[in-house]
Length: 150
Image (cartoon, rainbow, N blue to C red; front, side):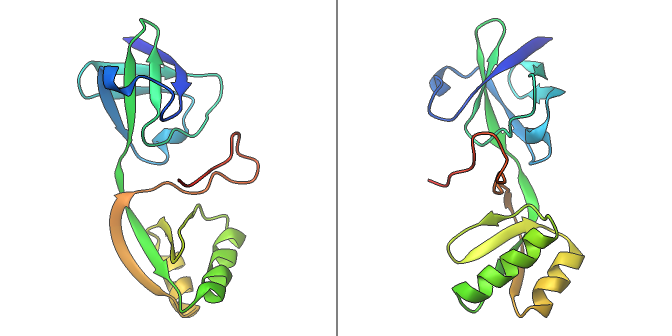
């Protein structure tokens, strides 16, 4: 089995030379050591020193010199919208108070589908819409490298 021990961020590796790709949900993109199923070359062992939070477009450097692209898998999420920015800030505060991973956009916040969180958001006056798409939440204040939206 091929081994991937190098992580390169999107735009810093030769993505046109990728031998294949791995489709991973948010949890799988947080792992340190795990067997991954690459679409074109079969199993790859991810074996890094510590979890780094893989992102869509990152590259996994293989011991034999090849590369595998990381793709974010679609997941069941909730799109939470508020009446205005202040209302959205209050909702985001409540999500953070529950240590709920959240992807924050200008006009909404996305969280994993969870009926308790949906009920809380409804109770706070939000509009909650179930959707399916890749999930890319904030990395957290103590997350190595931080998180930046383009």
